[in-house]
Length: 228
Image 1 (cartoon, rainbow, N blue to C red):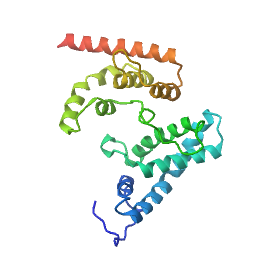
Image 2 (image 1 turned 90 degrees about the vertical axis):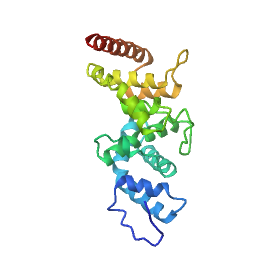
Image 3 (image 1 turned 180 degrees about the vertical axis):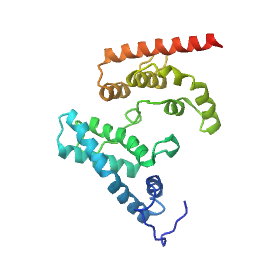
Image 4 (image 1 turned 90 degrees about the horizontal axis):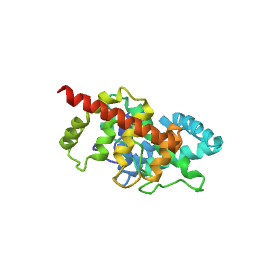
């Protein structure tokens, strides 16, 4: 993207992902970044505030807290405009951005009880649950090379068939544990808490879902190999 301070840009007409591009160049083009951010907030504030009110109601928080949470989520976008348009996979850009924003906002709510200002999650708290194989590929692949990621994604593709027989909650638990579980260690505590809150399940139920999902996927893989 090339621009100068003398350019006249109609930010109301440009794509939402491009707004984030402008925001990311705030050091070089502060005026354009501020205008892009203002339009980004205007474009998504209604959806974000509505979702914030829904989330906050589950924690017993009121509309004022929801407004603070929404503002904090946008503040984090200004600081870290890291949306990856390559992960959309058929979704509209605006829908994809909302799905990216919701976990950011949810983290703000989880931190609200212990903070009077916007939360700036540490490395562990910024971790997210895994909901699809593309995100699992990103998490497991040590290389930034696109071809390496394609190879890993192809290897994982067989699990698409196994997931057809699982509920969405089973699938998310399976993928999240595959992404974060290491031999002899539990998954990060922040991820465990997010699974409980997002899926509305207690720890013992999550363990049962994990066991059932592992058995189901392993059975599918064994049967698939036997047919070859």
